[in-house]
Length: 135
Image (cartoon, rainbow, N blue to C red; front, side):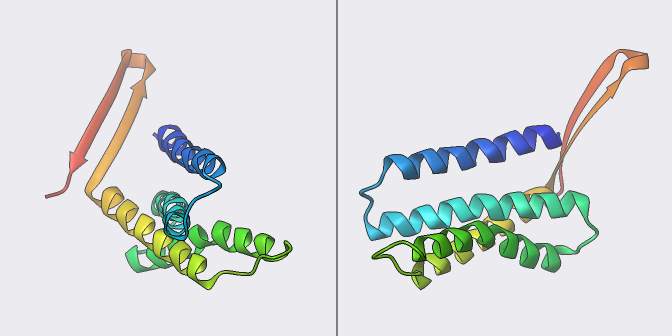
């Protein structure tokens, strides 16, 4: 299951990277949406990792998921600010933070509500797949 989730998040991330490379003439609004979208993927991936690999409770996972999801956007802004005629953009960082938080929040809701479990029992020659939803 972890492999499947990792592939989904990597696929979404690659889509955003390719989209941003192909769309060099994007307007300022499109740029903010792109920052929001990419950071939301990183926020969701971070919260999902923390959800299954740590003992953190929901508030801690949201805080750390948002923080970790914001780091790639911060790195991009720092790198961009070293280039000629380019400055660090606070509004881009706000979009990064908002996107990382929304991504972490949505992933938290998904991870709390739906549990996907795959079992393979070779001695019985069976694979069990179950999805449960908490009402």
